[in-house]
Length: 434
Image 1 (spheres, rainbow, N blue to C red):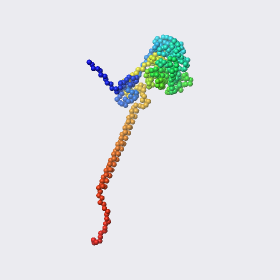
Image 2: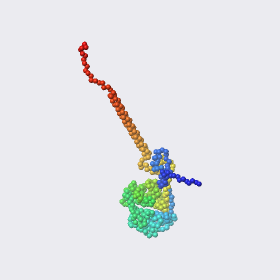
Image 3: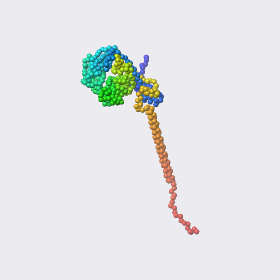
Image 4: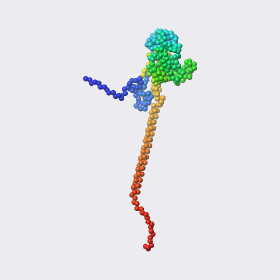
């Protein structure tokens, strides 16, 4: 009969690593440093830890041919993956195509300035004549809001809300009845000369991304783009509003941002100059840049991003190009020395936060100098203390010798005989003896 397996007693002080989102928490994968302690410390400070995290941008694309698309002045492109639709808006009508065959399925005569479609393909959200309204595809209107200005809007289906923006005022509507639920204040730090080009909402993180650029003279006759500084909030970049914490952040870009794509732990900004920038969602650090035209294989600007399928769309002649952006993470597990570290830094692969403060080698040198100075001071103090102690002992010895001399003197004075008498006067000799 087999003996039952004994349970192994666990040491409760032992730390069991857990898998977390932060890749750097995995202590099983480390960079092998040099045996030199100073070099190891320097590399750790430069790399921000014991590991190097890298990521690779992978792009795939496809296209759909649509007859007569060259003559269609489409201003907006939307997608409904659930029904396999591609929807084009011209301002006067909405055209619905099959996303696989490119066949025209339906034409809706409807004037609009902006439009969007829900994921089920049942309702349209239309902004025209300064009114927001929700309309079913049979054109039976469910609700129409009161008149107000909207520059851009986006639909959040999980919360049944519509986020609208006019200049720097965000208004959130209830998508069930069109009523105003709340207003969001962006803050006075952002310039009135900034214009929003797209508004995006990350439903998972609860963040609003306001893509924008400095206002042009055509936007406002009283505002000139030359008066707007890109170095200050309100130039070219993205305003990020976190609803949960009420925190506002501004990410500056070299050019006006057409739209922003939330992408998990990252977000990508696509500019009017066909450059795309990838940032870390938490730190807002710039991680990589690439040409957005590489995704769609055509020299056309990307016009729409579908957050459900992470698909980018652009239009070129008679074809609609669809591109997907994937980011793959990996870890460097090979030994790294000081020269490689500096080479990576020059290539921009390492975000050297120590530059904002001081050089690690200088810090180590200063620390050694400080310790040597403290040691010298300590030795000097000990030397002075020893000298004082020697003088104290000398004084004590002198005092004891003085006491001994006084004692001997007193003893001698006590032993001396006291025979001294009063002397009589000497008489002269008498004459009788003669």
